[in-house]
Image (cartoon, rainbow, N blue to C red; front, top):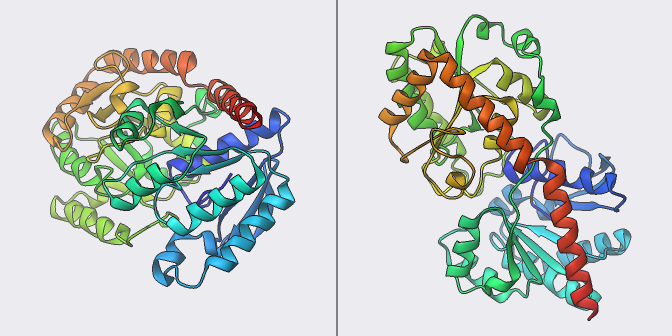
Length: 387
């Protein structure tokens, strides 16, 4: 595995890797991950049986500030050493069709030299010439799209649809099934006796954090004891260094509406997330950009919580409107507020929607289902490469 970040860096891809790697190890496979350096983590460690190698040369935040000049020799040696130590049979990269042509071409050259499959998981697409170029020009043996929306986007770039396969995310639902709310209350006593509106995505405008605040102002007028929980993040891949500007704007909105005292903002580690869902009454994920998938949806489903998402990217593939959740138009804070108020005022409806989402999760989005499909892709790719 090769990707730019891994926990404590928080994001959808990082969460996916933290689940996929150990699950592959439990199936008897040897897994290594080459990823970016992090101040709060050693450069070499084993996590869930996965051998993690951290290097500054894989840290996008560092690369954005430093630039890519004069890195080719060091990067080639680092990739070569990592693959030699692992004795890799398959190279599985994540989002390497963007950010750095240098990295993608060096990894491609190593895959060809070793005659092993090079598999890309496309967790995102960007309307960008570099994304277009790397998606088309790198000779991927197989491309895993995280949603049919991403698959269509890749094919729109002219990528051969025969090498693209959709594999929806899966998560380990067990921690969410019977999570203890007491853990959340112990850390955040202010949540007790409140009706929680939870937006678990990282705090940013693309994730609709400003839309949530605008809706919360309207919700608060109808349901007085509601309380907003936002996920402010510092450990993220902040390509372009825009995160702090987004957070400042959301805080300004909270102050404008005099809602700061009715809002909790913190970074919640993965092990605390089940308890945060357990404390919540309504979960929202109103992204304003085309959300590729959204692991948050699966966490809400597994927790049995009613969910409101935007009609954006791959999310409507997962949430069936008024059945397993609600789908609203992007940037529509009024519809978001009205739907949330309906759920707060009708607990029986909220329970029914949450139970249906939980049923959908168990049928379609468990971790084992995703892992089995990815192993199958590895095996098919290795067979094709040998042939």
